[in-house]
Amino acid sequence: MDSGLASVDIAIVGPGPVGTAAALASAQAGFTVALVGPANPRHDGRTVAVMDRSWQLLDQLGVASALEPEAAALNVMRLVDDTGSLFRRPPTEFRASEIGLDQFGFNVETATLAKALLAAAEADSRILRVPQAVKALEVSDGARLIRLADGATISARLVVGADGRKSVVRSEAGIGARDWSYPQSALTTIMRHSRAHRNVSTEFHTRRGPCTTVPLPGRRSSIVWMMAPDDAERLMAQDDAALALAIETRTHSILGHMSLDGPRGLTPMGGLSVERFSADRVALIGEAAHVFPPIGAQGLNLGMRDVMALRECLDQSDPGAATGLGAYDRNRSSDVRTRTGAVDALNRSLLSDMLPVDFARGFGLLALEQIGPLRRFVMRQGLNPSSAADPARAARPSPKT
Ligand SMILES: Cc1cc2nc3c(=O)[nH]c(=O)nc-3n(C[C@H](O)[C@H](O)[C@H](O)COP(=O)(O)OP(=O)(O)OC[C@H]3O[C@@H](n4cnc5c(N)ncnc54)[C@H](O)[C@@H]3O)c2cc1C
Image (cartoon, rainbow, N blue to C red; front, top):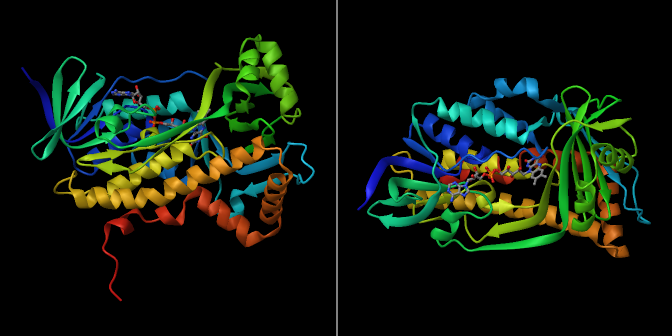
């Protein structure tokens, strides 16, 4: 026999940072909300660079001020071609001030962000928190029925799949996905260092993938180092002093002497792309809808743009209505596909040792270095792509000419 737990406007499946932000935004928009699934914060030294508009969203959701003491501003992003290629360029720097901003965004530990969002959702009386995993999704009259691990059900007019890369919501809704892997793993950790980072993030592009330092408060930075899986396993097995020395050497000691100051983690690198972003009374957000390697701090920011687009596109009288979900699907298509394609192309160009590919990458960096309007265009697109600048635009009919 069915045990119906609740009936809500929107059920968000997956209490990761993107799903929890969606739950808060949906409650603010006046919908009744359930946030379903076990919280599973990772303590693996991973941080996220939360860019300008995503930070504004966190502010609207009431969590930015709690995060401020734990976050460091990103004022400059520097790319260093460390491939040894014949066509390598000198370092290229992008400054937030060039596009009239104080900073591009703020870097914070992913676990800290997830915890702050979840605390806000759990304190919000408009959000029903159900910590159980979802097993299945059924079609019901004008709604979807979510079946939980213990057999209980939740009825929702819209189900939002925010349940990560192996999304049950996506497969139960019959949305096809293509996934792939790269011959790389990302080693993540947090370092203390003797020199000040001056709020500069540096991405060293090596033949095995980028190694990036990202500022944290004080003389601390997070590290994301992509390399061959065997090398990553070997480094993970080293003691703290040996790993710190390897990181200091890889980053050419730009931050001085380094020591480990946080947990470490290893993530196999892969990508995922979906055939569509919505189905009958279902929408996908975050890593349920897109995955790519951590280059250029794009993944979570794309997820936050999913949340903003969903908020703008949904029909207030029926959040699961096909018109709103169609608008959401159109809005996300070009933004997500452009990011996935760009990150994939850059990553593969590093792994390739073909001269024409090296030449194209070197030429691209040269153009970015020399052509001011192009640099500013790329910086603005990195923060706020024009295809997603006005999520409401996709929801409005085109003006007749
Ligand atoms: C090394 C690394 C560095 C990164 N750096 C950046 C960066 O600087 N900037 C940036 O923008 N992005 C970055 N990213 C990407 C970013 O971390 C992810 O995009 C983001 O964390 C994904 O969040 P999410 O909420 O979509 O998914 P997840 O965090 O995976 O959350 C999914 C949630 O769903 C739950 N769940 C799973 N299955 C079920 C089920 N059956 N029922 C209910 N719940 C379920 C899980 O318990 C979890 O709580 C980085 C990624 C990596 C790997």
